[in-house]
Length: 163
Image (cartoon, rainbow, N blue to C red; front, side):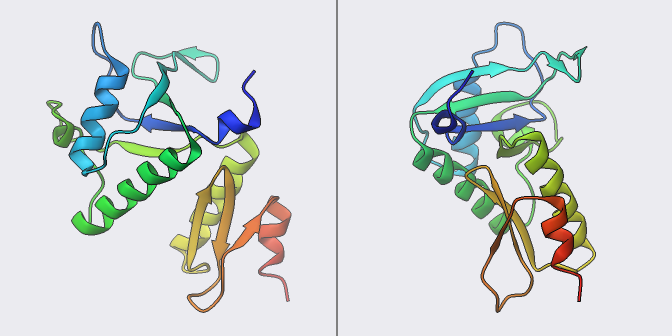
């Protein structure tokens, strides 16, 4: 089992198709290069082969970096890329033969993943100004004048909208 410190260094690449004899650190390097991010040190990379108990071939790639700071740089770089291009990173940008999007996100606990999904739904409805994860924790901003608030439970998220 990973320590909490290690969890802060891990993130997930979703949408990258499986290749025979794939070199996951090399794929990660291509993705970083495509987004204009200096390639950090990868300490471990593996592809998840089971999701919800079912075997999958194109499962997400789990990448562990040397430090939490490197993970933050990668996530910020991906965010900057998305803002600059007004689009997500696509497989073709990293040398794959597909125009499908790929995503880089933090590795969240199941509970925090659910909170983030609910917060993003509220953001889509313009009920929140921002919803994001940072170091495995979910934060929301009600409007541009308020600082982000850390959300630890779904009830706490809902409490923001109660009078």
